[in-house]
Image (cartoon, rainbow, N blue to C red; front, side, top):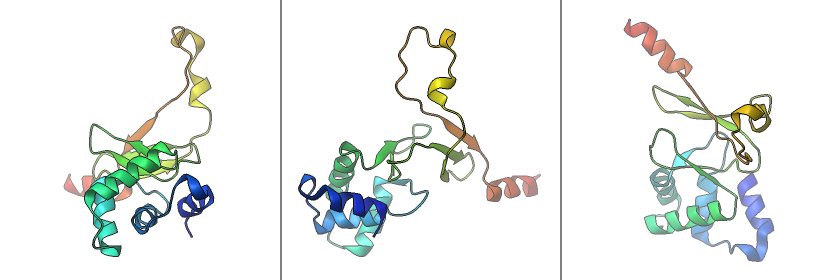
Length: 145
């Protein structure tokens, strides 16, 4: 059973596990999962052909509201859903193909901002996105030149 499915099972009465919700949670299982709602729907239909797009969107919204899934976007693209909500991390995005990986840099970006750069703000959240080329795109870029 996936971490997400296990966490949802432990919620018990907080979130009734229907077959549709289970399929959405199963689709989100794994490391470095950052699917769009349409990708979740396409994979869910393979497991449960009658699942509707609206049901997938509703389940994703509920998972985000429960704090079990993170919703984020890179460069104004479609929202993506990350089941790695229990472990603080940042994202590494390939500028070529768009693949996304979870990364865990050392240091604390929340405390790394010097006091004089806070302008009196009480900082509560930091979002850092690392960008570059994955090995495949880097090789393709070298061979194009």
